[in-house]
Length: 125
Image 1 (cartoon, rainbow, N blue to C red):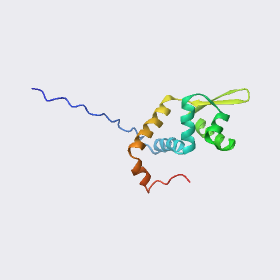
Image 2 (cartoon, one colour):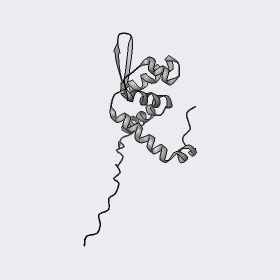
Image 3 (tube, one colour):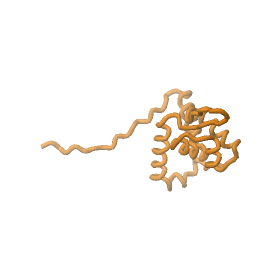
Image 4 (cartoon, rainbow, N blue to C red):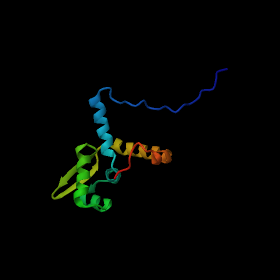
């Protein structure tokens, strides 16, 4: 008789670049995601295309601060901007960005106590 086949959860092997420049680039990507306001804006712009005014209202910050966060997300290629007249419309540029944020949210939920207790990574000021 054959032994029963066990189904195992396959885990992806992280594809971290071997070269320092590649690792720096990957770390910069995570730093772009490492701000609570930018994460909130990413989530908001993943739902639908949003105007800059929508983003300011949602974030509850000044227009200048929200613009700086959106500029970072656009510059990193995480959000795209479409201009129409005097308005700018923002949306997540790649659906994998939203998937990544959702995956990370699940991981954080599973490890919230450990992450909150971590003394090696400081919370944002």
